[in-house]
Length: 469
Image (cartoon, rainbow, N blue to C red; front, side, top):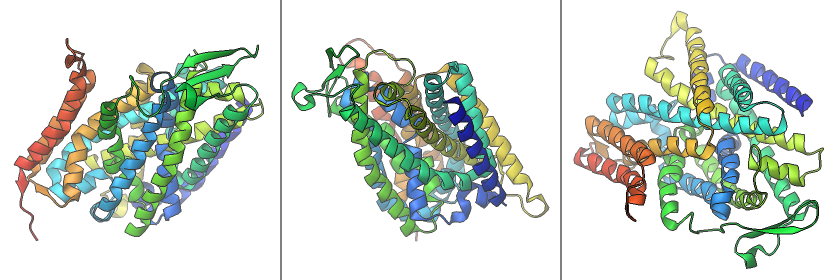
């Protein structure tokens, strides 16, 4: 595995160096000259969405969610489909990142708020990718968690600051195909391999039987799809609000869309990505159920499945496939966050004799952003918890204002800024609020999450302006 990993890292360096040579200015670095095809954008969307925090975290959640782990990707697909009607307006109002869209919809004040809040939330997403990569490296190498996290962060941060959007788009389609193929092969071996088998799933309502070395089967009760005590319809509603909506109005999604050569290309890419996610969601759900039946494991549960069902020769290849997707998602997220910070600091507006300086500044910002994400990853090690915390804050703050503007509705800038701040604060409070006494008190945090969206919309409605032609 160590030799394969070294070869893999060398290949990444070569790709980054080659991509860096194509980068001449900020538009090259941030949006690849707005010339990407539907295939490239769709591949980048799928690779970004099927990142380590989504795949590895969802499979890890199998002991609690069982088959309901499929909902992570299903709500993502739903969010992408909901974006298609808004794609034309979003593409025409955007430039490099989401704050550009916010400014064109509402003005400079809301853009400033967005430029501060989004990088804070998205740094948590980058940290989730570092956690996922570290768990992978821990499983397949003798590295400690700290060493693995530092290695992962160094790789994707260096890769991102070298090649920018060109290198991301160049590798994402291949990486998306690689992870889908890896998941399908893993699921196939889990179903039909000699090491373990799934028996009578439909009749046992989620009971998984696995055969050990002694061929003695042990039954483990696994929560089924679609709902159970640990995942109710109300939990799905909250997941759509805090997770699915980020695929309709999220910075990473818009950053992919802004790379497309035109609106039609962007729409085709979004639809293709959504259709791809639906079957993959059920594969992930199956692996979550299967992995839960393995009992206690060290490192990522998906790698424990690979160790249980794959022949030794396939394990290093599967490990690199997983690592590829983690890095693909990580570099996209890191670049999205860093582009927003660059806009906040005015990087990229320089012209003339200072043409080369903006790129150096942008790369320095990416480096600092990666270091902060690494520090977070060294403190928090729960992938899904870190991911959903960051996404919840973002969703509570921005989903309603972004969709409000894309619907053609207007609001006074000060009310938009207030809606973003109040919505984000309520969402954050919902994540940290302890359970209160009583049946309803146990759901206090959930109620605060829902209130974030309601209050957000109320503030926008109060500050609504009439449309002017």
